[in-house]
Figure 1: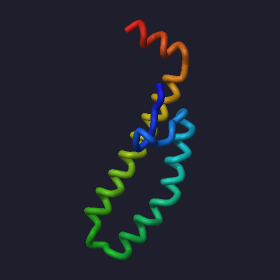
Figure 2: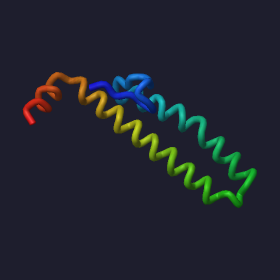
Figure 3: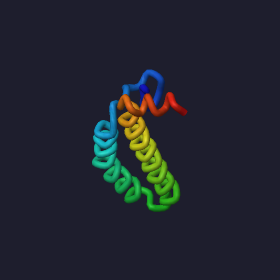
Figure 4: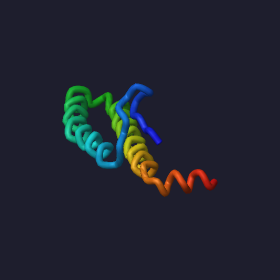
Length: 84
């Protein structure tokens, strides 16, 4: 099964390692941005909290997509899916 991120033209996801690498990059960059946003505008905390929750929801989706991509590459998965 071919799993793509973000759109039908997005890069093909090969497995969990690729998803984890992308998540790690986001986790290295985003907290600094969020901290700076909070320092500049503490009154916007509720919106920032929603932004953080959405980012982690997207990362969870990436992780699940990586799991599906990796699981569906195996021949035994294809055979099991055909039996159902």
